[in-house]
Image (cartoon, rainbow, N blue to C red; front, side, top):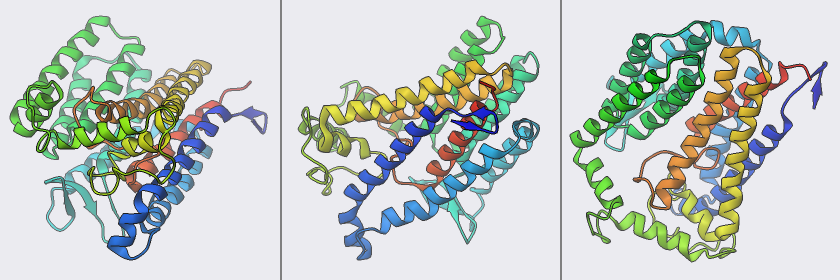
Length: 360
């Protein structure tokens, strides 16, 4: 598709649109009963997702699609600094909202949101600019990651930390840096994760449940047991849209973290495979966009955004099928939640902007 002599990657756009439509479709299916019970309106969650997620996400995505990419690189430090300030503000009483036993949400009165979702994209923008501008040393990397680890550890948000570090390692690997840097970073971050797991008993118990060291199907293992029942019940073709049985109070967080289990139950193996394929296409198009530009910063920015969204999908789905510990990370474009959806659509806008900046 061409715009004034340029083109953008309409395959990526189509993939994102399909994911967004599927998110609307399945959220309406899963949330209707809960909406009716809690608010007397079957479309409350869908309406909320539209007003605070889809609409602002599309508007901001279009804004970054049209903005000059050099400005994004120029403002990269201010972007990461601003988001880090927001991450600190969540610890101030009166501004913070406790979620999952930790301060993760920021309440500004007219709107509330989760700054850690914006941290993912802000870090990718800043880190891609840093890596592309000069040969980076390990010290700036560890300073940035150290601050992020501290803030996210205090918010007990290890799943977001895992997404950011995994994305950072991929970006660092593709930048012109020594391979031994990658080995050292991987070993040190793995050690940091082990320490964080040991410091919080519930994280260690989740890992033990995953490895089968704890057998507690009615306690610690209840959620994953019900999730696997839902996925297994879907069979090849699924029970049919809106026909999930497990969504009626058996699985916690069905509209957010666990929505993939309901999708698998209603659409079966075929529907699940189709959804996973969409994320694989998204990753492929992101890397294809990266290869078409000669600007190193933009290459790494495209790789970072597509890797982040794909890794997040992998973590969420991996937890649902029992190959990763259960986390509180949303399924991109699908799970309920305005913060993550807005920043994901902004990421799509940036990817499309990079793709249109390259002459065909």
